[in-house]
Image 1: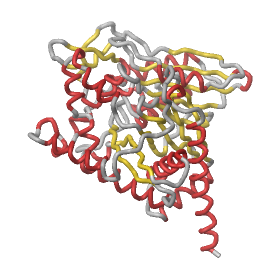
Image 2 (image 1 turned 45 degrees about the vertical axis):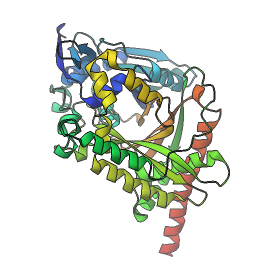
Image 3 (image 1 turned 90 degrees about the horizontal axis):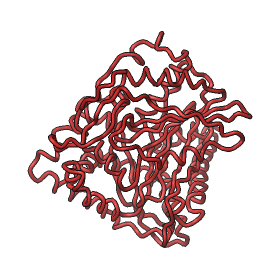
Image 4 (image 1 turned 180 degrees about the vertical axis):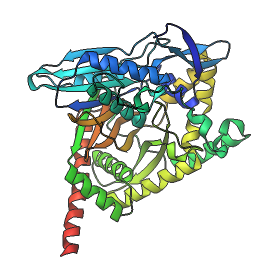
Length: 454
């Protein structure tokens, strides 16, 4: 690799947002592959080197350019992606993932990716984990990065036979902001930001401001991320997919509805409550030119809304409501506005002006997050992979960040929460309620179809 360092490009507002979050509550994420066999560390290093040469954002740091008055990606191909091998013995590997979620990336130091090989020696199993800064990727592009890595490793750490998918250099991608439809270019339209802000406020107020959840600790302790996993087998998932289609909903809507109803039950009693839900959404299909998962790139945004829930709220009507509202928010451009907010723009101009951004984050309304990326593609060469999924740490104002994905027909919901920020037992109770709701809906659909067939 060359030792030269050069400016690749300025950060997009979306990328800058997640860089700025490092100073408040890091939101980089870990994508991990669970495997039935061991991994060779040298093959992993060689394979990462191939990917790093072919994908510009895998060899960058983030720094401030005084002349440009911009946060920029600095490319430094002299720094390899670090690989750390850990033998967990008979212990679970999840604590290593939990620690990675909060371990910061050093400013001005490339790359913004780390790799861990977690070995379970007694059983011969392994977990391959990539920690990626959110400024250089999202759940879908990072899962694709993992798939390409696994295929390279299975091929002996060589790009031979992989074609252009692994070996051809690509640039740093066309930033999200540059692919917005013209009507969403808030920063160049007089009054557009105020108009968008009004739409966001009306949407948040549609069911009223969210109630203060009782599960946040009165006196938060030190931040301590915990990972709780909900797994649904292929049969349950297929029944749920079939039921979702019959009910005119979406899988994303069903997952969001299960989380909202599960949280409502944590209040106890039958009084109505209003809950805030944030949903990361993949914008690739909604941009001027549809973006790819390669190069590694951030093409996700956030939309949020409050939902009024009471004792009579049922899963399917709420799922349809979430689906309709989320699609309307994407169409209207709410998520695009999110990254064009004044607090982000001000902090991008100068690191010394980040106080407004920090204040906005610290005073945000309390809620939760559900991210559903759908079906993840399996590696073509590595048959030992049992599951690929990802996890992200929630911000201080969110009780849980749930990341749902499907692999080989099975669904994994990785629920990350700050143990020091919540009343004990909150997320385990929520996870149990969500699983009960989803499994119950799938089983009811099976019974209904059998009755109909009879």
